[in-house]
Length: 239
Ligand SMILES: [Fe+2]
Image (cartoon, protein in one colour):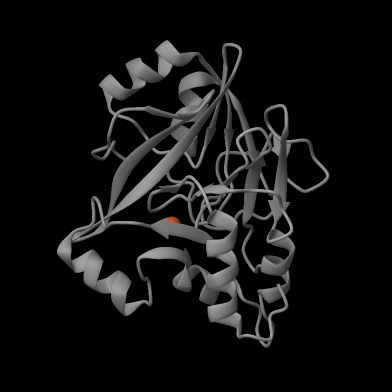
């Protein structure tokens, strides 16, 4: 049984051969929030990252872009629409080992830092200390870092219902760059910290960022992440 397609905007090109869809998801009664999918193109081959199910019209647009060759899951909490795409396109499914929230589909290609990225000039970053699998994908050419729940840039609350907006504020989200607070709470090991992972992430060469929620930050993303890390983990974070 697949999740339905929720309202979304048209596919837009972010960088050459990098597209995104800004969409939404209903997570409970009166609770709607935004969600993003990235589409990477290489020749005719398409890679879907943080998949969200598109409407029938959206799928026509997707098919016009190329052929879906693989689905990449970066975050354990985002997997609701992966099976839909794997079944529709009979494509490969990439994910880290140990998926717990959505154990399906079966993994064809394991994601880790040793594995090559799904397109040329890309690499995976893995949050080693997280209790649930979470990674990010860096596209070197556009210096774009694609995250799921770990980092989210919220410029505005598009597709958020009033209740979700309140809930997000209550959970500690703010405008600008956020380390997702509920995600951080769930993935932080007991008595441990995710600080070291974020210190490693800051070493990556990126300038733009887009998460599975929020908007795209096209420039200055690294500085924004650094500020958020300092605010969250304290000034002693030497980054
Ligand atoms: Fe999420």
